[in-house]
Image (cartoon, rainbow, N blue to C red; front, side, top):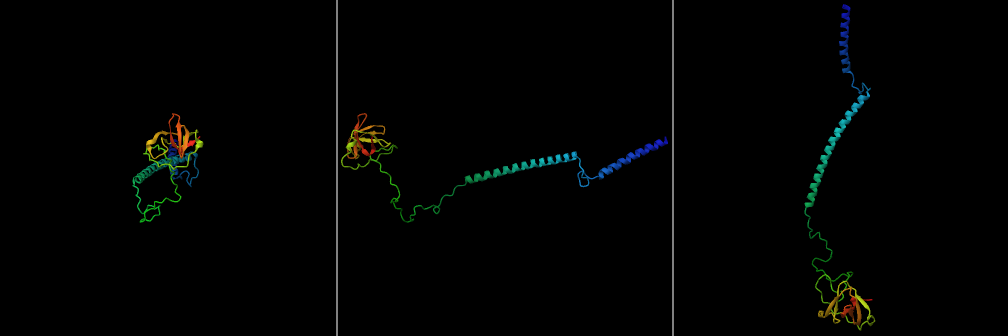
Length: 219
């Protein structure tokens, strides 16, 4: 019995001593993966990588929030700059900044003489009526030529201008009281006779009168 007691006490002492020794060894052992303990298990590596990835994801999320806030600030500044630019009044041109394209001295009146290469406005034939409802200017009498072109007698003709043309009772533009009617390009004419620069024509409705020859195309 005495021997058994000694054995039990010795076993208990061994367990206690081993426990304290083991804790001391673990506490003083190097960290896994350090220079003193390069051998690392696969599970430890996986766990370390997972923790590092989570940390990086958290940092990326914070950076994305900061970038969004910076972009909002930039947009706001650009909007304010655009409003300021659009509301700024333009500077009126001064006399010094106006380009003088006439090359005329300031104290010399500009000449009314047309330039050598300036095209002249074509003269409007008499009896051509404008279609813009503006007052009609009484044309001067056409130049009188010697005789008339008898070769056109009996031929069909039409006016050659888009606006209506006056048909007159006498071959002159000096008196507007002799206007019979207005002829358009759709009204066919038959030339009855020619006198100077005028044709005496007949319309389909039987109306007859004088029309200026330059306003007529003979078929």
